[in-house]
Image 1 (cartoon, rainbow, N blue to C red):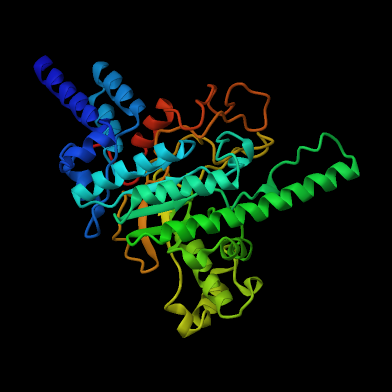
Image 2 (spheres, rainbow, N blue to C red):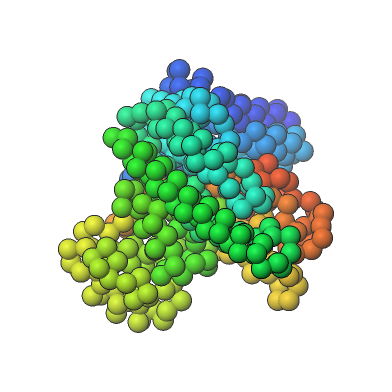
Length: 416
């Protein structure tokens, strides 16, 4: 038994070592993804094979620790999660570095005949300066950065998720920093937020045009998720940000809404975009909370036949929605932050381009499962997450507790 234990531990360590190899090394040799378990490789069904990038380093550490402690099943689950196709995030690098990374990823994927997913996350004023604050210095710096990424992708296939939260969380919705209730200060802050919002829309539009010009690049703009903005609010934002130049939009990025809620919301958004394109009003469109019978009756006649052929497609993030969204205990928190490291969630449907929905181009794992959403305080003074009793790691860092929850509660199951 001890020899078997050591052999399985060694196999897990070898698999994680292969998965965490630098992308540039993979690009030079372009081997087939033999390290991923067969079940994971088959997860794309009859659709296109999706690219498996190097795993988050924290996954390798956790898998080794679990295996060393004799928890081989959980270690295998973490390994399988890390070996599942997922997106590569680009943001905060210099233009030269971003170009090199985009080239390395797309070359590696092309060598395997696989489709990579890139997330661009570098827009100025990102995340309203909150947990994922950062981004390019200004519009000129952002355009130069986008140009560099486009050069890195070149003519190779890539799906690009463009700036999560950039449209669902506009600068005008950031908390004002006026320093008081002085009327002049409030007006000045509103004017500044208005200018930054207009600039944001222009920046997203520029990125969509430049990236979509790549002969094999599909760009998806941010449409939030099913429990955030109503359809009639997000549709004008998508149009103002240049959705006409993009393949479509992305929904549920880094969130936990169910596939059913996501699909219904996305269908309504796509129909409303087509309705507005032909002269209709967004306020005519049913929102996701409208009674389903009423909304279906509207969909039966809207948009018109000609517009249906031009309806925008979408992609969804199923990385952590296997158990749906978390509902905080009633009255417990001033700000529940249901998006921030919620407890008891699970991995969702495996990534695939064979969705069975003509509007849904793919289900991707866009957010890296196991990576923290940030230090979730839920309206308290902190420093601990009151729901978990521990301090949440900074956004993007590995969160072993949540990673293990996602593996154990995956739906469909990832543990064997």
